[in-house]
Image (tube, rainbow, N blue to C red):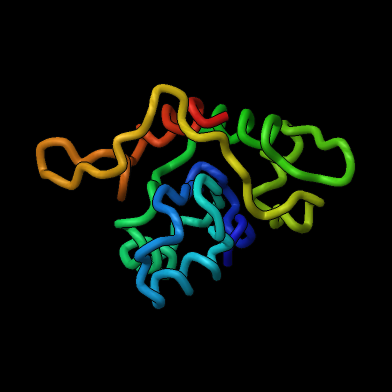
Length: 148
């Protein structure tokens, strides 16, 4: 399930950021991105680290950047970019995220981010320097901080 429900610990959350735009995206990949709620460039979602979600990420890896989010970065992301009709306490949301969905907590299940300050290397696909597309593991946190 998207958004975080089902896991007891939020340490195993994966953040997915759409890097490529809408042009020249195959229709099956486009459908997958829409179902993941990644409808715009530089939008982000939180998903659980499950085998099903890993298969989805392998399908869209050439159009998104993803990696494991730390608790501090998750707190900053919710504090600065969460869209909610009422004021939310980011620390409480981070603690409850393992038990509840973002939608259950009154927050939209996606985040709109600023383009990364300092630029982005999204076109490099060579083995030596891959750019930001695909699995970034822990370095995704630095990218998110540049996009807040």
